[in-house]
Length: 121
Image 1: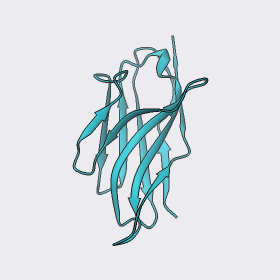
Image 2 (image 1 turned 30 degrees about the vertical axis):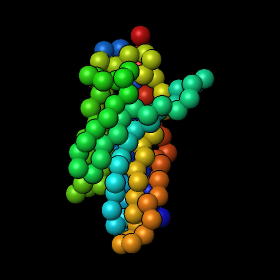
Image 3 (image 1 turned 180 degrees about the vertical axis):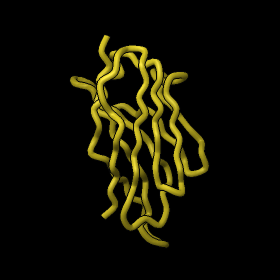
Image 4 (image 1 turned 180 degrees about the horizontal axis):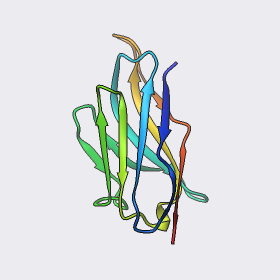
């Protein structure tokens, strides 16, 4: 089974930085888009950033200029560098990847278990 394992969350003061990582493992033939979503209490899940296999990126307006998404295709890993963090960035962050498990197979979405990011004011 394909697994996504996240790391790097934690508690940080406003203005600080954190770097999230998400490594995909298992039977993987190809990975298309990889992204980060977040879910805050009382809010709907929000797309934070996404990156395609050839490196094209897209960000939520709320994080543009502060967050940077990147990936290492040799390691099936996606990163989220978060700078100038704000209390409103507090949420559980989830990694997502579109994965094809074999040649000629279908694309399927996989999710990580989530990592808590808490920004204190």
